[in-house]
Length: 288
Ligand code: C2E
Ligand code: MG
Ligand code: MG
Ligand code: MG
Image 1: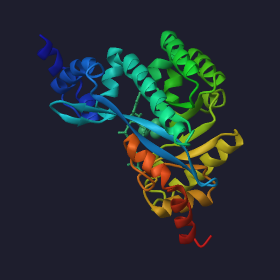
Image 2: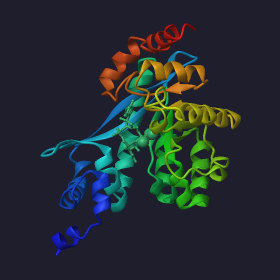
Image 3: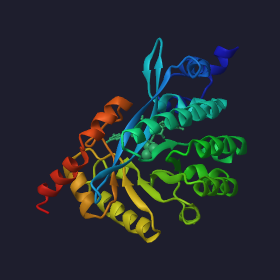
Image 4: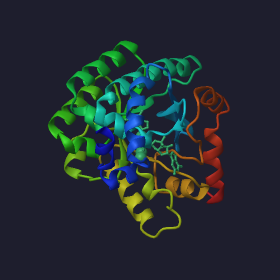
């Protein structure tokens, strides 16, 4: 009976998520136990502040070391976790892990915020919001949340209220994947966000496209007018980084600077003070 239900699953959905329907069902069952079994782990990707020439924060990205399938990326299991409510435990685990790791960073002199991606469904979950606030407030560590605008559109009143509670206790709010979803300026102006992350869709081909630079530049101006810092994600080339600097982009993130890496590698990266290398190289490229 379950197999029959699986074969009727809509084609578009399993194509979009990169797994076949039986795959999805069994992955979903495995995910339930993955947290307890210690199969989930975090990697960190630095956020490079261009003017200050420092790593101003890092983003936590979840991965799953599956005993049979090997490494499973979030694109293949976050949606499953959202459908099954496992997203609550997964995110609470992530926040706990990030609190531990941020303490390690701070002890090494890198007291920078660690950003956690928060699924939209959680923004209207009052129990989750209370748990997250309690964990973070009692820890006293610097944490940021990355949320997408689509998350807010689902249930704007409760989402905006909860985001204000997060901001009130010092959590930095970043709007993720800006421009890729159903962007609504009406919500944008109400969000207590201090960072706007331009989706990599507009950044990866920045220097080979005619329109992307126009979109990026106007988004930077819009964000600055609202007193937000702009983060470009998906920075893969020195020329893109150079153009972003000239356009006044505040923060860059992407494979050029660093792929998502394990905590020990992040500590090495920060100790080598890599930030300056990336900021000065493109400046030379442009003769600045
Ligand atoms: P995101 O938050 O927008 O994260 C950016 C994604 O782009 C990451 O993929 C990252 O590895 C990738 N990326 C970074 N730099 C570059 C680049 O220069 N070029 C290209 N092409 N890609 C780059 P990843 O780790 O597979 O994560 C995918 C998405 O899964 C994330 O998108 C986020 O929405 C979600 N996610 C990851 N971890 C969590 C989590 O703990 N909780 C929740 N709810 N979602 C998560
Ligand atoms: Mg993110
Ligand atoms: Mg993003
Ligand atoms: Mg994304």
